[in-house]
Image (cartoon, rainbow, N blue to C red; front, side, top):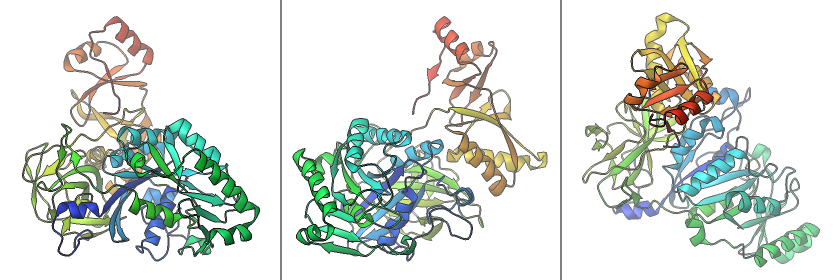
Length: 531
């Protein structure tokens, strides 16, 4: 089957216009995975919303498929979910919220056209939120903001608007406004039409929340002081011109704001409708030289994620690609721009969490899972027709380091296979000594939790229980062969090679690094930024 194909439509631009490809990002525990489930509920893709946390006796969220996610009740690995709503094809990329997995989130942001940012009303903007917004700004991604958990005690919404503008630099333009204080949520005012939407709770939020549309004059009588207070606040917003503006939103200058509670389903429909009405469709993607690839050009796509063992029964490897131009057809042969080699797409899937179904065709904006894609790496461009290469996927500078060894030396083959696979996926970076091969590799990551995932997956998926221990390194730099010869003469420095071939130097002491930079400026010691 195709991803939301229109009967009789063959123009890629028409298909692209129906696509809404977006990510949901947030600080941990802000409600991102809950909102993901509720979008599926309102779109009719689920009959009952799943539990957000995999507590004993309860099923896990649809988007959380990894064993460790279900144990800990957190999202670790980004997930692709596709569904239809209002005649449009939605491609939702759920992302991990924990900062230790921010590199995975960054890769997903390279594949979407817009973002829903979820903020906890009680906490506002937290460090991870700020970091993610900065990436959205760098990529000029339009951002819709959802002030979540308004059914619980929290901060004043006007205060949160000020925080969004001062810390992030996006001009907040509320599309809905709450009636009732935080923790005493009655419903929202539509700032365009002026009507009041009153919400009714459902048991555990498992079903769509009944909504009663109440005219403003009647709402004023029935809600009394709460209505007056909300109208006064709307008057302040009117006075400063905080109106939803499509042009500035698409330019990444303003952010439409919605208020609600994902857990109780309050306000979820408004956000979903905003994605349909405001979010951009799939547009022509710039290549590595900045030239947009026309939507009607030959099929092209890029790999933004690689994941193994989603299907434990077959131990397969799936590459997630974002289609950028033309029509993808299962079985077509694409060229990998990195290797110049052909890649056959016999096994193409539409992914719904851990579940998948065969997909015969896809269009710009769609996300396709290519199964058994052993030759594909994150950042690879695939194409037919005119050659194209899309910009590389960003990588993060590692901040923590560790060593790993199998607890059972008889499981070394499994250990090595898992090491290679998890490096390719970007779970960790595996650094090897070019003079010693696979002996004593060093693991590099953004956060400690990545090492926990690494060890957990080695054990469960590769049957290679391993010991992961902290390594005594404080800094990492790019270097070259000429400088490496000198650095090997200095104690407390190790020269290793990254999976992509880049040579790096690990330093046990930042002081020693600074001394070398000052005393021997000719040495190649390049800071690793997001690259």
